Length: 104
Image 1: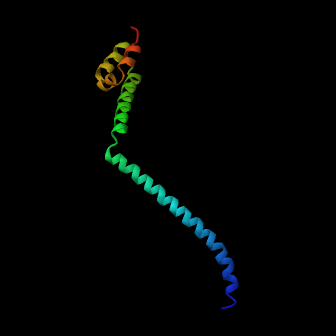
Image 2: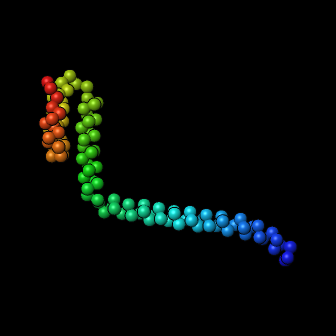
Image 3: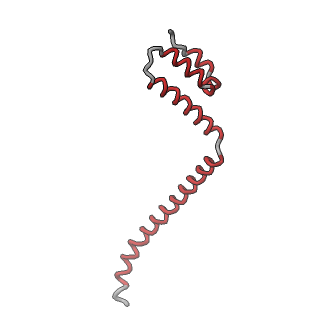
């Protein structure tokens, strides 16, 4: 038994710091999981401001994609038609729509 004791001292000296590092890592992981669950819960509860902003941005991106991908000869008429189709864009920024009229 006395012969094993000198071998246990270096093993314990190396094991204790490893255990401390692992414990600290586990506590950080638990904290991150709690934050992630809280964020997921907010999304599930339907944070209206975020979802409204996302819906508006998605509508604007759809309009811009249609403008960019359509290769028509009368671009100004197409932009005006797309503006007329997008009530969300009209309600959001009517002043922007007036200032960005494309000359014919």
